[in-house]
Length: 151
Image (spheres, rainbow, N blue to C red):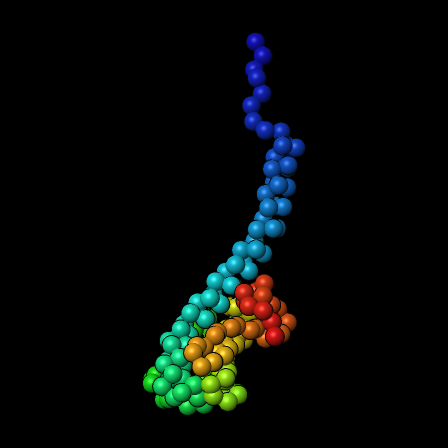
């Protein structure tokens, strides 16, 4: 009586290893980009309190954002510190004349997020502030890595 073969042949195992290698080569970089973009979202969401304070201050000051560009003027004790970055310091940059003004909130990322800087730009009008996000055009700082368009 002849015994039936059991197990896999070497070629079958090599094919499986090759398929796993190809999938890993595609999936790992995609996952790393996803993690970096998620960390940037954490950094940006940590600035929500600043955005709300700017909106309230701007409304109180008839659209004049120059009256809302420091921590004290915003009624905050300090700018929030992002988990993967550095908080803005000093005076925020403003431009234009009330009520059509802009204010910039720079968020510098740590090495965990590529060391890029994303600027939150608030553009005011008589009735609202529209927020947009721009990343620096430094090497490695792109929409793919930060989730935001490069300037």
